[in-house]
Amino acid sequence: MFGARCLLRALRSCSSAPCPRHRPAARVSVRGALGVQSANGERVKVQGWIRSIRSQKEVLFLHVNDGSSLESLQVVADSSFDSRELAFGSSVEVQGQLVKSPSKKQNVELKAEKIEVVGNCDAKDSGFVHIHTPVITSNDCEGAGELFQVEPSSKIKVPEENFFNIPVFLTVSGQLHLEVMSGAFTQVFTFGPTFRAENSQSRRHLAEFYMVEAEISFLESLQDLMQVMESLFKTTAMTVLSNCPKDVELCHKFIAPGQKDRLEHMLKNNFLVISYTEAVEILKQASQNFTFTPEWGADLHTEHEKYLVKHCGDIPVFVINYPLALKPFYMRDNEDGPQHTVAAVDLLVPGVGELFGGSLREERYHFLEQRLARLGLTEAYQCWNLLPVVIMVP
Image (cartoon, rainbow, N blue to C red; front, top):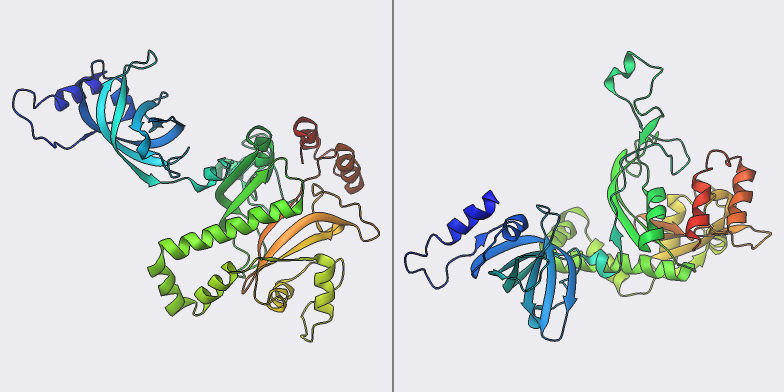
């Protein structure tokens, strides 16, 4: 209330003398605006994020919050302000008049004169909800045991005790947390730091890096998943090319000559799809000598991936349906014996090799039970194993 009174005094300080016709709007927080008891058209500027949006024939309603209050400020604007960029999660700067609200839910509302989108929210445009997954966790999502363990400095003195009563690690993936959240929000993603204790000093094995991960409920085919992956790749690439032309030219001229042309070539073509089995046959027939001999049931190495992309005309290629033995237990069984495969996919791109990886999750409870038992993991994944009973969607 003190801040609101100060705001009103500042806004009305020119009431005793003529004011300029276009006086600048005073910046105010959402909390400060909501605390005004008697609004008389003071011009203010509010910055925050859109929490909801409702468009009618002649009027547009936005609820904006900047974190200063649990409640959001209602912004009323002419329908001409409506645009695709005004979406949930977009950050905006709104200038207008603070007036008394006819609604009983709040005293004031902001009658917008100008709405500027500071940053849009593309992921939400596609229906994805951003989830912040924990950095410190007790699970090993990849199951490879290559984790950094977190311990307090006092651990040296009392080695038999754990700070959290159980061992905890820096996250290798937010996947398990996302799978739980996808049961509530259908399409979720996270973009955060990831840590891998890889025993390698190569450029392809970083100890710390940022990674985009997503989970989508009701996804029933690899074709649908590949459409999402291709769309994400092309949207990201086109955004960089159109919004950062000087940076692209700098990289093209001094750092990676020819990569801009290669990228534009990729964007003009539909990505190709081959099966893992087809990929192995292509590699076996290649005239090139590989360090790792290609054979069915073995992992594809970077040299294999780069060759496959070049063989396909330097166009990104999806490799699908990998051997069951190569992939984690949660990937969906294709039931295609004798060559047993799962519904997994990797996207290979020119000059890099694997860029994306994904799969359909095994939603059939009895398949999960059998596979966990076969791998001796039933007890270790007892709690996680119950999730499909709750979610029950592919």
